[in-house]
Amino acid sequence: MSGSDVASADPLEFVHRWIAPGNPALPTLLLLHGTAGNEDDLLPLGERLLPDAGRLAPRGRVLERGMPRFFRRLAEGVFDLDDLRRRTDELATFVGQAAGRYGFDPRRVVAVGFSNGANIAASVLLQQPGVLAGAVLFRAMVPFEPEPLPRLADAPVLLSEGRYDPIVSEDEAGRLASLLDRAGARVTLRWQDAGHGLTPADIGDAARWLRESSGFVL
Ligand code: MLT
Image (cartoon, rainbow, N blue to C red):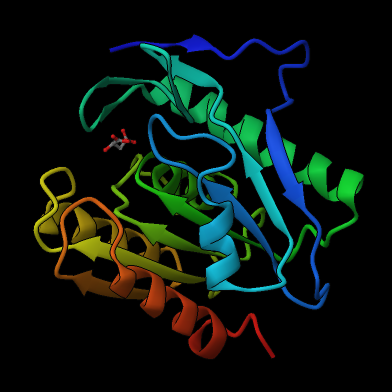
């Protein structure tokens, strides 16, 4: 598998949607879709997870046989690490630029990612600590193993994984939880009776976690 870029004049620009917050005291949600998704996919999910929060939803800039992704892969679960590094930096830069453009607080951005979107969110946490205040990661894998470990300063991270996921094994999810924990994140790992797809339980648990446990909503 390989991929080409979604055309854009500015290498740091992403096709994206921005929904201004109804309540600016809430953190901004950075919504990151899965393979073959787009900038519209997770907007309703964001609204259900944290109503009235600002929502920034970019479209992945890599095309794999016409399907948008956030970084290239060589095969299922085998990532192109050079491309991942570059795309992670691009996304981090885009978030900073969007904060300036739309006037949200860059220190209060919480990623919500599904599958490929969760993997690039985990990569931003590990490669660019400080860009995300925390994350909700649905069906995430270990994007890469950082050496040395970054310092995630107690950043709250929810991992919502599927017990019967044919793509993300229990071992893989456990390794990601342990990696983030060793880097200093405050990790909550939830197992759903589910495969790779999202279920109502994922959404309910994540909404509760955001409101009651993450510390983002005062
Ligand atoms: C996907 O299909 O998106 C994979 O399972 C995750 C990835 O490639 O990042």
